[in-house]
Length: 341
Image (cartoon, rainbow, N blue to C red; front, side, top):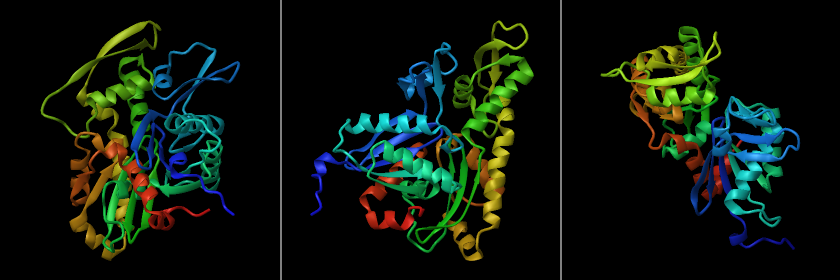
């Protein structure tokens, strides 16, 4: 006879395991957690020092006794032990530590994930306490979270711009007709800003500072005014603290190539789309999700390059986790869209 725990003891969990941020959805409670995908360890004892936001605050500021690790790179696990520990801490935070609580987990992963990477995600989830693990392609989860009617025969294009990857997916009848991924996204833009400031100002800044610049001044097109902010870093020659002022135009120039790569990927995907579905796109257009969708003017540039209507999804940062939350409630749809081994 099978023994089943009462529902109050088990809460299924949906996770958007992102390169930059991890979001957690608990069935019946909604989105309960959003934390940077960063963890800090004591180098000598390997004990966890901080997870999420406190760990992000340590980036570039730690003594030699502490390692700050980003377990995911380009959307997939790059440091297995750190990813496992990150998942375990986040799951414990939302539902406590108990051997009786072994939830079902639905995890959003990049569409370009390899079999080895899929196995790493599954193993990390099982070690974090899952009794069953479902993997769903992030563009599919984003489409569901954005409210697109994916079960209909009409084609829909979703462009999910995350921290590590940009994925362009053509979806019809609850399946991915075509998907193309490029490892150019938010992290690549941050690195481009770091290199631009080093090249033009001989000033060294860190990843966290570059992200702050992107959020403050990032834009894909020229705006009406010219905003600027003061950036503090280290002089690359004298190695002393230095402050400079950087403007919106300079940030736009820094990320220009990254935006060009994203647009080229979208155009390439459209060229591979079957004619009947391409005809549907004239009306349905392109939907942007992920944090990169918030880059000012990006939708306008894509519209000019593709001649298609472009829409930014409501709350694009949480589309993937809202999508896996919907799948937790619809098991038949989850079985149809989840990745096979």
